[in-house]
Every structure is written in structure tokens, then in C-alpha cells.
Image 1 (spheres, helix red, strand yellow):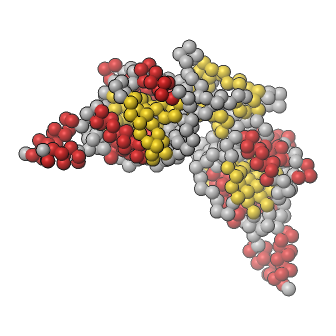
Image 2 (cartoon, rainbow over the protein chains, first blue to last red; image 1 turned 60 degrees about the vertical axis):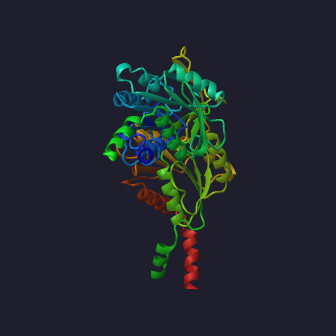
Image 3 (cartoon, each protein chain N blue to C red; image 1 turned 180 degrees about the horizontal axis):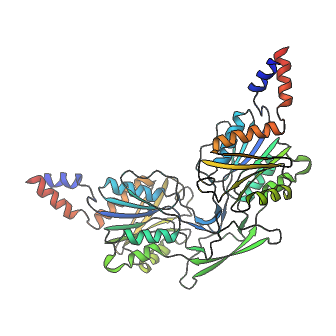
Amino acid sequence: EIVNRINAFSSPLLAGKKVVITAGPTQEPIDPVRYISNHSSGKMGYAIAAAALAAGAEVTLISGPVALPSPAGARMINVTTAIEMADAALEHSCHADIFIATAAVADFRPDTVHPHKLKKTSTSAVMDLHLVQNPDIVAQVAALGSKRPARVVGFAAESRDAEKYGAEKRIRKQLDMIVINDISVAGLGFGSNHNKVTILTGESRTEIGPSLKTDIARQLISFMAEHWQLNSSDLKENNEVSTS
Amino acid sequence: EIVNRINAFSSPLLAGKKVVITAGPTQEPIDPVRYISNHSSGKMGYAIAAAALAAGAEVTLISGPVALPSPAGARMINVTTAIEMADAALEHSCHADIFIATAAVADFRPDTVHPHKLKKTSTSAVMDLHLVQNPDIVAQVAALGSKRPARVVGFAAESRDAEKYGAEKRIRKQLDMIVINDISVAGLGFGSNHNKVTILTGESRTEIGPSLKTDIARQLISFMAEHWQLNSSDLKENNEVSTS
């Protein structure tokens, strides 16, 4: 009993698990100079990658353009656009144990990318930009069928009715879990080192924070491991070894 | 004669001069999450600010969102949108000795900023974004009349016919000098630490680089001081002091 407890405590929560994480914004070019993007420092996704690595997981981090150092030990895939991120996510998430979509993917991109810088002319004080929808990456990964990761986790950043939209999004996109943050709360979320999230699964509602993003990341990883009992098989193996 | 030469060498090129510099991109919000921006690391503008400070100038740096440390000794004005940058530039450049516009200002902004995150609906696979023109900051500063800075310097980033467009831009915007970089050259310009520029005044054409942006910044500041003989009065005063 004592041996079990010690092993349960010291066993890395995600030992041997394959975790794929998307992070940061995407940039959708208008021309060589201009682009559309989303606010995202990448801090939450990078913190989750670091927490998953610390929990013993094998981590692939698919990242849009951010100003952050790569977490030591992560396999980095650097991308710019949503289409590049979708390609990388579909390729690397096959048969993963957990796919975690923290990236703030641009929903729309310009339908035409101009090869040269658009000139501002004195006659055109207005400009219409025609946008088309980008792939919904987390929904595509959740619909992978036989290659689908065992668990798919989405993030929702909402400025109103955060929990309502988040709950709908979880069901519509066939996610196992959604992590909601209300971006209307000042001082939390985008660019900040702090955050507060609400986690919805089919069966539970859990709040974490307000706290440092690094703390929230560790608690999220613990919550996933415990909620899905991901380390039960590893724990059993560890016990067998240590009591032999 | 020897005293003159020593003083000419040791006198800070821009001692006591008031230099105002804009740097970095601007971000033009679509809603609380999305924005339009321009590629710009801010490195060139920050390097010019550092070079101007080293040359003895009093520097005000009006900066869009970048991931760079503030140059020690600069007065920092942090802004997000082109309108905020224009307001700061017009306020701080009055009676300046040199105004240097390195910022990659977004030419257009969405005509409406949505207070809440726009929802992606399954029925709308396309979206039209209506943009209106932003103020032309360097042209507005150059047209300040009696409050106009003594010298106004623009930057032009062009992907083709760089020198032709740059020369036209200098005249149209009433600039004393334009610094042109050809962004079609791989490995130079945006995000890079290296650059190559062509400087046009009414009378001269000068190339600097390819070189480190920090080197180009120092050479640009030296060129401005020498071309406009900005330190001649200071030099005279220094000589009087040291030979008295």
C-alpha cells in the first residue's frame, strides 16, 4: 500500500504518451507586407507543452509565429498560415494519445494573395477584402476516424456568453474536452502571464485559476491525466517493477 | 587645425538634437481577437534610435507592438493603431530637428471595429471586410507648416521598382530624405538582422549595406549629420571652448 502510493506519486503522469499541441496565432497574407492575424502570445500553449514534457510525454508543438523560446525536448513544427497548421496537425496527430488545440487560428484568409505590395492610390480611400473560411483544425482532427487521437482537447476564447459558446463548440466539433477562457476579463488571457479557465467535458465542469499560465498548464495536464486515468497502465507496470 | 580635427571626431554628431522616430508595425482591430497588421520586427527603427542616442540626440521612440527591449535613454511612446501613432507623431514631432518614420504603418483599417468576437457560422464561408484608409503619418508630419521638423525622413519597403516608387514617394510626401529597401531580396529586411538600403535626397543617391541593421543605423545617422551639416554649430562652439 505504501509502495503503491509512493509510485503513484512519483510516476510521471503522461509517461510514454504522445501529445500534439498547436500554439500561437496564424498569419494569413494579404500581400508580401500585410496580413490578418489573431491576438495570441502562444504562452498558454507553450506552458502546456512544458507541463506535458515535465509529465513525461513525448510532445510535438506545432507553432505559429511567436516570440517565445522552444520548450526543451519538444519536437517543434513552425508554421505561418492556418493551412500549414492544418497540414501539420493532421500529419502529426494520427494515433496520438492527446491532441490539444490552443492555437488562435485565423478563421478567415484573403481569397487572393497578391504577389506584390498593393499600392495605395489617392483615388481609393476604401478597399474591400474578400475572405474565405480557413479549415477548422481541431474539428478536422476530431473527425480523423480510425486515426483520431484518443483524446481531442479544444480551447475557446470568447468575449461574451463564454461558457454557452464553449459548450456548443465542444459538442459540434466532437471534442472530448474544451477549455474556455473569457477574454472580456481585463488582465487575463492574451499576452498576459495569467489566465482563468473553465474546463468542460461531457460529464464535468471544473474551474482553474486565476493563476499563472504555467500553473494552469500543470493543473490542466494533471486534470487530463486523472480524468481519463491515463497513467493507470503505466502505474501498474511501475508497481510490478518496483515490487519485484 | 589639429584641435579642430580632434573636436570634429569626438563631438557627438547629434548633440542636443531632438529626434523623433516611429518604429514597428501597427495593428488595426477587426474585433477583440482579430486584426490586420504589417510585417515589421521594429529592429531597424530601434537600431536607428540607439544610433541617434549614441550620437548624443534626445530621442523619442513611438513604437507599435514589437518584441524588443526599449533603447536605454529613449523616451518611449507605445501605440497600437495607425491613428494612435499619428496622434503621437504629430504631438511629439513639433519643432523636432529630425523626424524619422521607419514604422510599417497599416495603410488601411476596418471601417467598423466589432466590440465582440465575430462568430463563424456554418452558412458563411466567405466574409467581406470593408477597409478605409489610415492617415499617412510621415506626409502629415512633413506638412506641419511652421511646426514642421527641420528634416523629415521616410522609409519605403517595396517589392518591385523599389527605387522608382521610393523617389516618387519622397517628392509626393515632401520628404527631405527617403530610405528605400527592396523587400524582394531574400534574407534581408523584415525580421532579419541584415538590411541593404538606398538613400535618396533631392541631390544624392547613396547605398549602404548589405550589413547588420545596427551598422546601417549608425551609417544612416552619420550620413544625415554630414549631409545636413547638423553638428557644424556645435562643432564651432566646442572649438571655442577648447581653444579658449
